[in-house]
Structure formats: C-alpha cells, structure tokens
Amino acid sequence: MRVAVLGMGKMGRATAQRLLARGHTVRVWNRTPGRAAEVVDAGAAEVHSPLEAALDAEAVLMSLADDRASRDVMGRLAPLGADEVTIVADMSTVSPSTSRELREIAPGRRFVAAPVVGGPQAVVEGQATVLLGGEREYARDLDPVWCDLFAVQHYCGEDPGGALTFKLLNNYLLMAGLAVLAEVVAAAQAAGLDQERTRDFLRRWPTVAPALHNRLDDVLDGDHKGWFTTPLGAKDVRLAVELGESLGLDLPVARLVERRYEEAAESGWADRDIAAVVELVRSRPEPSR
Image (cartoon, rainbow, N blue to C red; front, top):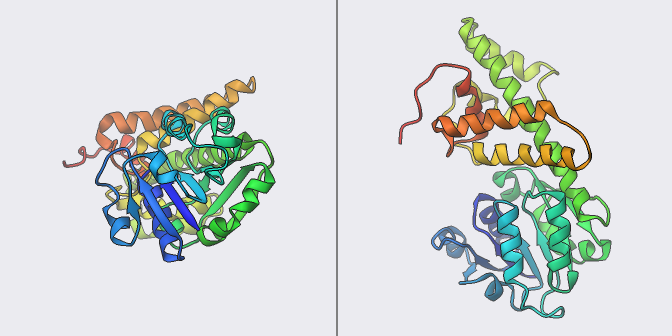
C-alpha cells in the first residue's frame, strides 16, 4: 500500500521502517526537518507538508507527541477531499475526547484511532499490539497495514475514544508500577542487598508485572537512555487523571504518579527514559550533558 507516516519521532520512524521492510511505499513528514534520514536511506520519500504526504496515499498514519500536535496536523489535512484519502489513523497517545474530535475533522470522517502498546523496537520487529477504535469498516480497510505492522490487533468498538481509554489505563499501570519498582530497587540498594540476587528475585516475583521486566536492568544500574522520556510519561498519566475527572472520578494515586515523572524531568532527566524516576529516590548526580 501507499502509506504516509506523519511524525518522525522514535515511534514514527519505527513504523516507517517496518512498513518499508514489508514492501509498502512510504512517504514521510516531520515538523522539524532532518529526523527522517534513517528511513529515507531505507527507501522512504520525505516531503515538506502533511498534505503533500497524504496526497494519493491509501492510508495516512499519524504518530505525534500530544493532543495539540494531532489536532494541528489533522487540520492541515482539511483541504483533502473525502475521496482523496482512504483513512487517517492516529497512532498517537491522546485523550479520548481529542480522538473523537479528530474523527469529526478528518477528511470524510474516515478516521481510526490506533494507539500502540509496545515500544519502537517491538514495532520494528512486528511484535507490538494495536488498539483500534472507530468504524469497523475503516479499521478492516487497513488490515494490510495492521497485519504487517503488529502481532496483535484489538478492535475496541466504534467509539475511537474507547481505544484511547484502554491505552491510557494501560500506560497508567506501567507508570505506577515503575514508580513503585524504583522505590523497591532504591531501598534494596540502600540496604546493601546483593545486586544480582535482587535482580533475580525481582524477575521471579509475581508481584512485579511482566511489562516492567524490560526496564528492570535500567532501574538497577542503567543510564536511562531508553525511548519513553519522563515528560511523555507524565503527560500520559496526566491524561489518565483528566479521564477520571471527565468521568466524575478522583484518581489521587494517579496524580501522585504524574508528579513523580514531572519531578524527574525537572531534576535533569527530561531527555531520559521513564526508568530515571528511580533517581528521585537514590542519591546520584544529574546526567552528564
């Protein structure tokens, strides 16, 4: 298929790389030039605007940082006629209300919410999961893309906000669990417990969620150079807090978790992985620049 990928952050680049490897024709755009060099070298064509990327595309995939960026880029696609693009799918993590808004302003309302569960490497390897929301017909029309990109597809219903609700709840569990794991690791290290025995126990204990295993080494002794930065972690938990408020719920633990990732970013770890939340607990110098 002819696919446009809008947004060349780590997830957008991973998406483009996977599609190219599976034989799709890929056109890419990024707000800041120069971030697409790797995928251009792999065969993608880089263009200068979202509209140029979307012209003649059979599918348009947005992979953007936040709600504001998703609204802005969708607005730039407004000149497209309803028959000029098959479907716009937003793979970004945004609020459920923003996802519903995107459907209303998408060309021809041909829109699918498609938040991703899994990191960039999982996408490159075809091992990630996608949560699909929107009209089932549109989700099915992109089966050639989903089947090549993801190991698992979950259709979450006609409301695109449903897919985002599941994604935000999943990410909240990850962030909260990681914040607690960081405190456990810091306490074990302060107590002088054997590092390798601690590592082995934490991998074996059923109280440590499987999704935390791939960050355990980084929490114990890493440099936190992963892909999911602390500001993005804070943003996702904030969206979960706002989701609760929209439902008439107060989520006090979520507000505490959000603040921990904000503090990590404010303490010099803004460009590092969410595993850097451990540095708020143990005494360690700020990262070198």
